[in-house]
Structures are given as structure tokens and as C-alpha cells.
Image (cartoon, rainbow, N blue to C red; front, side, top):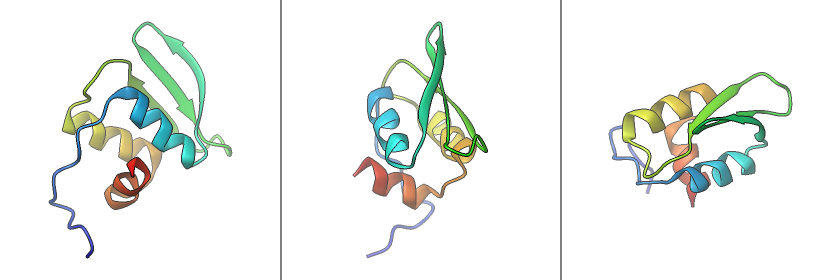
Length: 79
């Protein structure tokens, strides 16, 4: 069964988000205060993840957009 774009995102903390993005090839470049900065192998996408949890749905959508992946792919990566 495929997930629809309007389906709610699961609740996730910053650790789960980092782990999911790590599966996609993102790695931490640095941290400043309560924000962690990641980039992908090609340095094409830069993502900022707040270091608190749970991360709100709007913030998760922004992270997904920054990473250049689909909502369905992100949900799958959270697995």
C-alpha cells in the first residue's frame, strides 16, 4: 500500500532524523548551538536539524525539502 502525500509524518526526534539522513548519505559537518548541519556526499544539499525533539511536522517538511527527497522516501528511511 503506498502512502499518500497528505498522510501525517511520524513523530521523530533529532537522533532518528540524523540516522535516516545518514542512510541517504548525509553526514554531519558541524554543530552550532542547538542546530546540527549536514551535507550529502556531493555537497549538493545542506540540511539543518534542530537538536531537540520531537521535531514538529513543519520542521520535518523543511528538512525533507532541504535534503531533496520525497516525503515517502523519508518515511521509509525512518523505517
